[in-house]
Length: 297
Image (tube, rainbow, N blue to C red; front, side, top):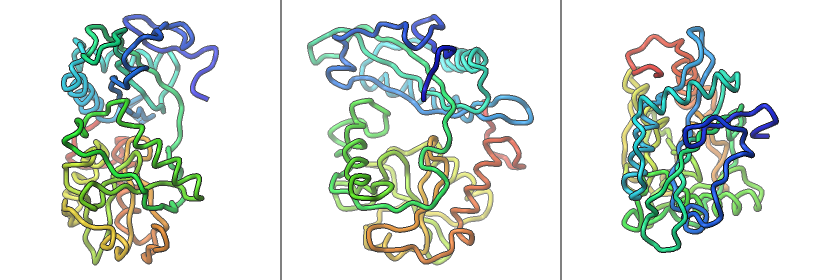
């Protein structure tokens, strides 16, 4: 579903078919999960193909490489230009984009001095779909922020997401909600969470969460639209008294929650801030909204 005979990827300075690159069996990304990646979206707009917040995503990719000690010398401008070229070669306008930095062969536990840059893209709808989600509280917690760099999208960190997703789906739910080590609500397996209560939105503070770029966009939209929102720590018991809740992420965009464990959110989704922000976000990424947010690169 991700590529076919006509697909093109970028790999270490060349545009190739996805079957052509040889990453190797001795790389640290394969053995130890030492690699970093991003999830980015391009949209078909009236002004042409636009990659949404490409600069922010590629700055975070650079940050991930830096904190993991991975050699990486591409500038943001170079990465953006390569990505637009890749989209054109694949004849894509609406697409999901996956830049990936992998590390070279080194069986020691010191970061390899070699790295590879691969950028892939494929046509992909909203990751979690459009229907309201049935969510369960996971038995797995978000990683201790002192154990790793939780704000970097490191490949190995996502074992935590795989475990929580498997647990949720194998027990009949759509998604998992993870708490942090202190019992505070953190995020789902691959997106941030907002809750609505008494006409105000709340979202977990930075610390143990991955503070997503979509999350930042929603906070900016709330400021422009006069929607009250507060970043704070809150417990599961508070979330289970909320009127409504929704997830945000590049792959998921904005998606509402139907229920959490045995609690069903009482507010009609169509009357919620989440629904309003879902439509505003779509207008923003399609360059159809009149506002002052930074537009797509």
